[in-house]
Amino acid sequence: MSMKKGKKILITISMVIIWIVTFGILINAPGLRGRVAIASTGLLVNSLLAVYYSCLDRRPASLREWFRM
Image (cartoon, rainbow, N blue to C red; front, side):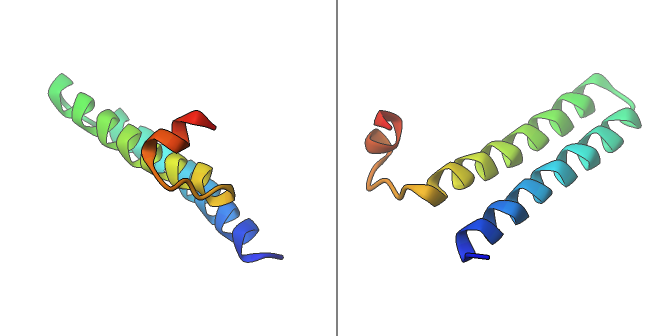
């Protein structure tokens, strides 16, 4: 197994675990403000992992080049 494939598997597993933990904590959140904060934190972390996952195959030199692909 290549290093790139191993990283993809670990990132995918991490994303699933983050969603499970986020929803588990979200169920017990008492107020709306807390639920919004928990949900936005989970979305932010998963978005960052998704960007890293998409950059594994192709290493763009700049943000503009990444959006061009």
